[in-house]
Length: 221
Image (tube, rainbow, N blue to C red; front, side, top):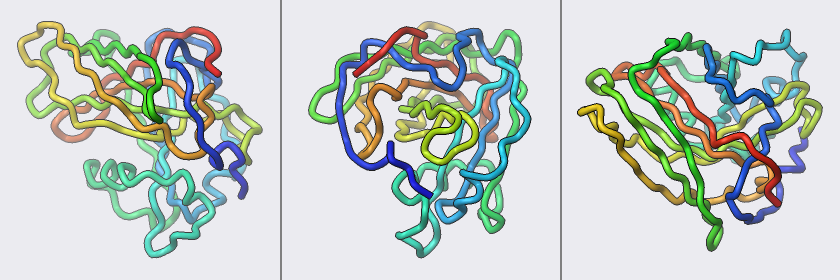
């Protein structure tokens, strides 16, 4: 497998986003997490599944392969993907991939909003605003995701690939609005014009309960 967009580095101003996976900015009714091992090339390039409705958003994770630094997807592997599997008490990716589907409430307990700032010295600043009263043990995460169009980089489907993650972040339990900033490193090889800020929150059992994307806008080069 070849991932030309995951070979080389770059920076850009975080003044907008490219939403190549879905042009819809409406809140999702479902989030699908697809986690695959870096040594499972077929998990990335296999037959495309049936198209999803716009109300379904997808997060793709690539976990490092055990004892295989030269795995086909190693360039985009993220240690936090393994931590995500552990949080969900999922078995190891012995068969290459796992998929989790989360139905989201129309009025979630926590409202998320993601904003951005300028790139500096290889980092992008992201702002997370939370408001609501989460269940005990809940936490939020900020991430840079790379929007990969269908037919690009060897993938038959559009992907929102998790490229860097900050968290867990505390959600203010009082219901008052809370704002947090984090600077996330631009991953080596990521195309800046395809990067987008994202946030989600999970409950005490690791179940994803809500997700937000940086405001739908235009190009960033």
